[in-house]
Length: 333
Image (cartoon, rainbow, N blue to C red):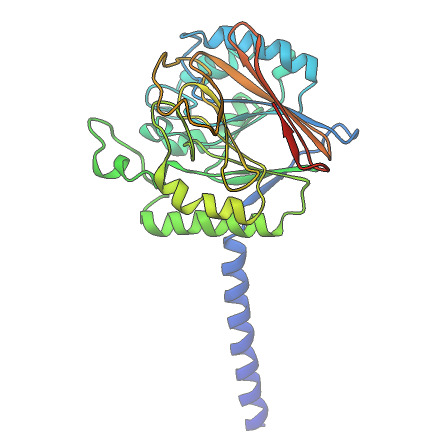
């Protein structure tokens, strides 16, 4: 009987260890949203960033062009690269800025699709928990905003990541800004977990197309330039798991830059409202294929073997077009 009790105790102890390990593993998984597509093997969506200004700085004009392109492409959803509400995020779940900068601006039928959004540095200057709150979906059911998560769209998986806490200057030299770091501190542990979750999700992905989206650039010829900590800590992971596109905002422009060591493409779409004219860094680099310092947005059209990226300006004109074939591993300007 004593022997049985001892064995039982050992078994319970081992089961407890397995449970703890399993629980820890589960906690490192990014929340996944399954987004069914139209069933014809294609996926179309728009990408916009740095937009929420109650319609000013041409935000409303960009929205009208998104309406036209969204209808033409019959888009499945919209991705937001962050800085969703200026200047200082939302003050709470009842802040009128949510309706005045989102619901009342993107009113077209073609844009009544899910909006998947990440946070930008300006969003962290407000009540972050409000912007992440499910309550906003009661106001506008399109709104989905989390710190980091995955959108599973059948032929593509989009890994939405929270990059703002990686920028040390927001912690050490915030100037006159007050940031809401609830849920982020301790910072080093938070960053390590973001990277661990991203790598695990990428390693498990079997999608034809792998897309990672954050607010800050890895490579940019715009005002902020490259984000060195993302170059050091994100880029090796993206290369390791054959990510096709990294999309971001932060710089208020439109850009297309190629990685020099892999097929990875850096696609900047941060021109949803206020743009920065003539504010460039290294625009003549060989890896920079396109740079536009005005307002606009990006469209993405995918099939299992083909991708087409288009950049539109505030007048709806296509300023840049780029194609890639998965079969030929060939890209054409």
